[in-house]
Length: 318
Image 1 (cartoon, one colour):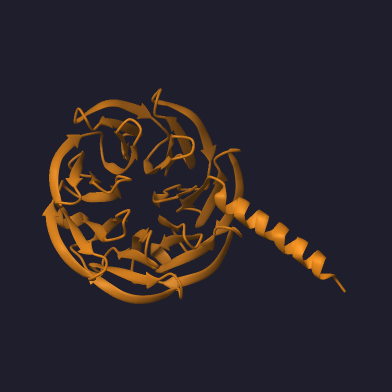
Image 2 (image 1 turned 45 degrees about the vertical axis):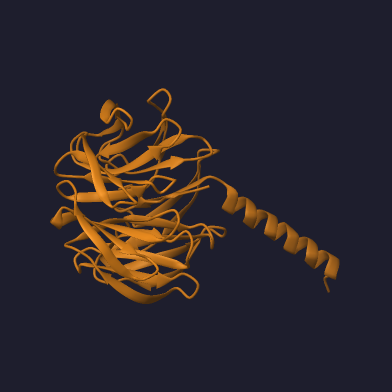
């Protein structure tokens, strides 16, 4: 029989490895063509795991409080739940007709999923992993984002050219504003003061006052902007131009595009890694994840992923 001392040592060792896995800077990249998620260690630039998920995965969100990664699978109408410590899929949640955009509340135990063709957002309780309620949106809700304080939810309604704000506590719409043509990716600045919306068909990005819930201005970028990520150190916005194979760099102080960086074909998901200060871009047709140095505006490295890398949403765990 094992001694209590031995069992305690094993438990401590397991706890150490679990904490280490969760603390590492990891990228969870959805591969739509392969129906998998590539888990990449951004420090070592190695693939740690390739996980089978639902069919044609696209959106991804991270619950850092519970160390879950959630992945939408539009073709199988579900959300796959990944345990970030174990790097294993632990559950599948039915999630409407066509789940796409997804976001985790950083404060409350909630997950929000945009049901693309049903004009609604489905809310889940992340403690029980069960559906709790729905919110009515505009036409074809795509990207969604929760404010850093968790008090507001923003939803891009692609076919209405609008952005809807919801009060996350009261579970009701606050206002709907006009943005550019076919808004898709949405993300908040870390301080919650601004919101950025990539407008696919008008080729621009809307910069929104998140408190006043009004559009401040638009900036023209490349062809078919899909999503964006903010470099808070330089106050620059990096925008994936899906059909141009580039990333636009927007100086928010000057309110203009200052550079375009070539990356692999059909860049979509994009995120900022706080620890390294790098911008990571997933390319759908390139099956890859590229790292951009925001200081030099050059691609430092490109890592292979699976077929059809999208990573739409919050995909970097650090």
